[in-house]
Image 1 (cartoon, rainbow, N blue to C red):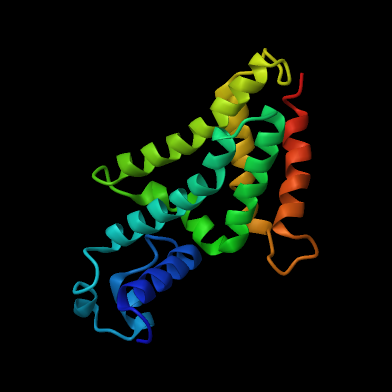
Image 2: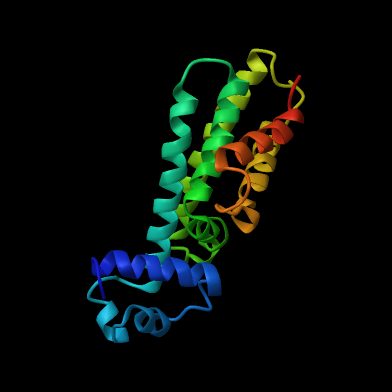
Length: 190
């Protein structure tokens, strides 16, 4: 196994969880893919579920790191939302496979680990709610919106991008994000 064993295990697990799903990936499959005996994996990781939690937590932190500076910045809330959408798509484009695991496999966490993932997701959602609420206050965004439903609609559309976005496609991540922002923000303008 070349490189740091834990990093290699994380990357292999991320790939397998994305391809086969969390439940469809055994520790034996992960061990075989990294060239270790199944029992040897436990020298590097606590459990398969701990791997999933780490992938999900790291992934959400990447999205937060990309979006939070725009939440905290001054300026037009619509411009900030546009930048947040573009930033989101750029994080997806950086590693669509990781994003698929973050968006679709987190539900397989047990009650012990699930609250941490839910809290991180809520923190991300709150970033968008905050900027939308500012947009309503400034009159740029419709006041009759249910803010949470608007945010969940925007996030739902963006969270599907790893399913169809191709880093090798004709448009860059920023261009796709800008086009998505045009579509998504059109429904909330005042």
